[in-house]
View 1 (cartoon, rainbow, N blue to C red):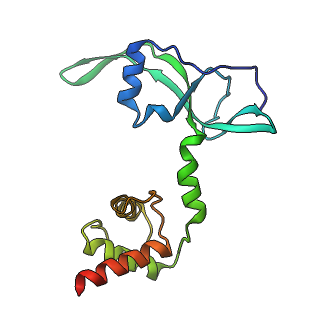
View 2 (cartoon, rainbow, N blue to C red):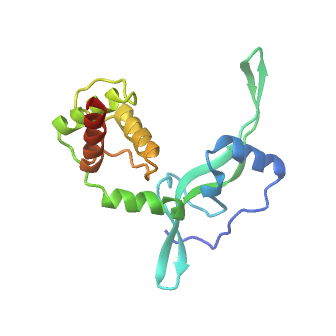
Length: 175
């Protein structure tokens, strides 16, 4: 969608900057903007005019809103008007390393291979779910922890490379 020119929001009050630090893992990966993105634009690219045509600079997430509530004994008793701060996008550059790792990953979808991965992840204490060959959040998290421990880019994907590394590690510990 072509919209009116918009700008990056940079001059935030210190109070809002502190909220960003609190609300997001790494606010440096955010692009706050005032673009008119329209309804249901989350996940869509935020484009800019590049030297060779449109370039993706971010992926829209949604509107960052400061909500205010009144609580009593830990329960919300009144909701005050929310204040939109800015539209948010994840900087595309923050995905470069993971995207390259994802493209280079030799993913397996074979249940037997995923079950072997789960078994070996369990053997080294990174996985406590069912060894059923089903790829889910627990398996993904365990693979990410394994990759992190090796100092590799975290993909969380069940790859042949990860399986070989796990098999070598668990074979060495059984010797």
